[in-house]
Length: 196
Image 1 (cartoon, rainbow, N blue to C red):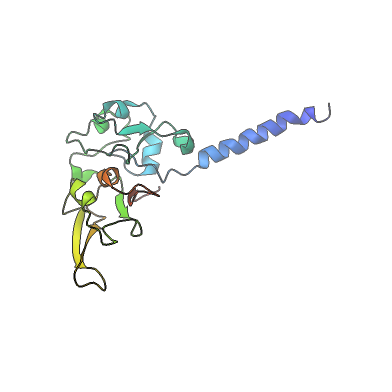
Image 2 (cartoon, rainbow, N blue to C red):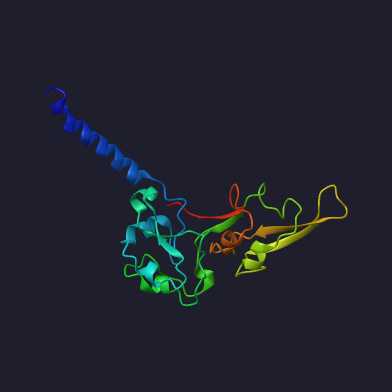
């Protein structure tokens, strides 16, 4: 009987700890749809209605999974499975009723993040010819260019090294979706420029 009277307090404390962990879960890994104006602004406006998800003609937008903490259910992109196709009319932003997605009239207005190459995994940087990310890029020769150079210590073979221009890259993730490397990880990923 003595311990039983403390069980409600223990349960409440456990629930409180779970709630704090849920709320404090970082959202840095979530790539938001075109028109998001930073994570802080987006999360304060998004009501998780799902209209942008329904409006996406490529089914690229998905609800954030349970491990996203308080962002669960909010729209994000799983770039490896389906990248953003940068629709010319941005139906996701047009469908948003709260202006969580706004101010995108052209591809250049989009800022979902920028691509980053893992130099240890990229086969092009290891000396094998691969231009998949470069060819997949809708902003070819602006967001991704190729640096043609001789391999270090090798006067015969060239390296076709992809180079990301962080200012031009909009973070659509087509390079991530198409990357030929998948194990142990994809050789290119998109990171958000903000975490606020």
